[in-house]
Image 1: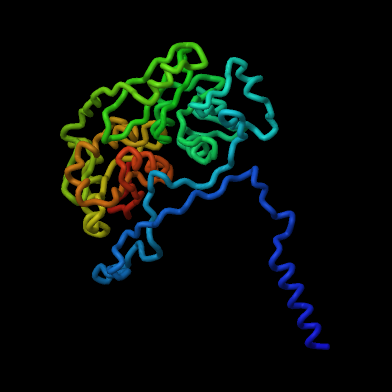
Image 2: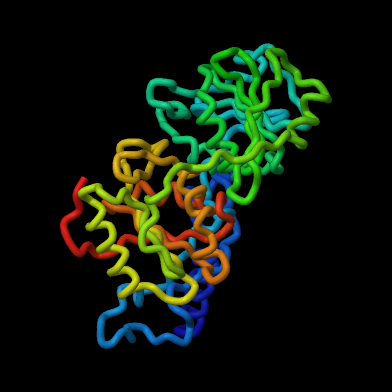
Length: 355
């Protein structure tokens, strides 16, 4: 009797333990699967023992750091797929594209993204949820139907050109959007190792002609404008550099951070960049003295100094001060511009940070 009771309990445990409760089953329409996890890159080579810096505790020995790679994204809520694109809207908003944009028709050569844009905040929105440009790019990247086609951006209010350019850079594909001039402009993605391209005027009508669409794949390149930051790169060698204004009162503080990072954290394969973070301007997250920089500006400056890091470094470690979590959102974009993994890091401060 005891044996039969034990067998019966074991069978019930197997039956119910192997079946998830029904009310916890995920609906596939609400989420998209995780992107494949790429190999992680440890801060220290495998042959270096943890905590081996002369008795000093190793601040990274709790686990390997993960490099921010250009193609790595987290799972995000998916939009509503429509013929020829996707609609990012509140779940209760079931309006079809033909109702909100009666002039529109699907184009197999384009991936149309319908999303609201708020000019005052310079943010996109899905219902009450605000999204910056990089967050919208992550959602587009997660769409199975995108297939890296040029994106046609359709919003109730026209986003400015820099927003479309940032979206193009993040996706590394052409973005076509209707701007305040009521003309369709095409923005090609930027990368530091390529010549830049001018915004392409496609006229005021839709759909696009075959000739116009051909220009999306064969843009006319122009020479990249040089960045006038001479004298603002300090202490540059194969281990790192600082971007500072020589006479600025915060310069000594930034150089102290670079020196400490070289002494405590540098190792072969890493290249450290010390730059100030400007949290008040999400579109210009860095600054040198009082001059504010976009992520593209920073990439161009580092590309000009590539002789210091391109041959020997596997990772670019960005030390943005004052320390803040928000700047890390920009690092995948910097990684895309430079085509090298970029690692966020915030060193322990040798002194009080100053704003």
